[in-house]
Image (cartoon, rainbow, N blue to C red; front, side):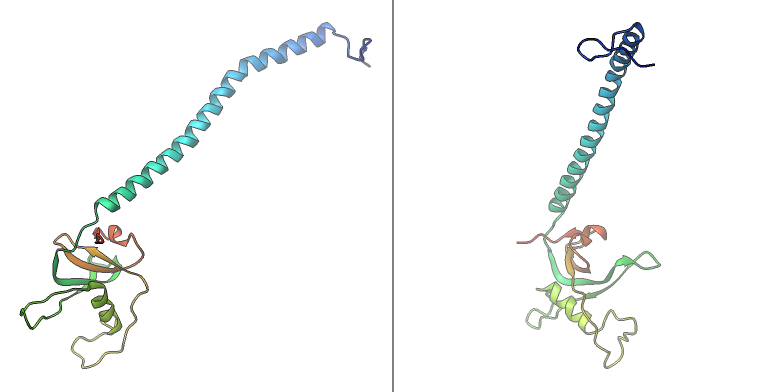
Length: 175
């Protein structure tokens, strides 16, 4: 059946056609509010998620800045073998100090260099024998970070920036 057209080449407005248009408009009116609410919920979820990420990033950065401390105990330094705990839950580390003949005590002025020297001497190698006259040399990690122990002692930990907080220590506050 071919629809009848009027003088403007438009289909005739039959009762059936009028009912179909009315149904389409009523469906649109009924569902538009729900669509708008759905779009608003999606936008809220998206921008809320972005907001949470921004606030979390700012809080993390603020924590790192606030938790930074100065090394106050310069008598010794702890050099960590790695930023991972061993099977017993402890960190594998070695303590060191530099003897000062004038004062009779120890004084660590450059914790980073002291630990690099220990790494190069092979102290953290698995086959290192502390009682041997010589040991094979080791290699210092590329990234070492100076952290601060709770008692104010310097701790040098292998890893990228942020490793101090990962091992539960404060970042060293630069001068």
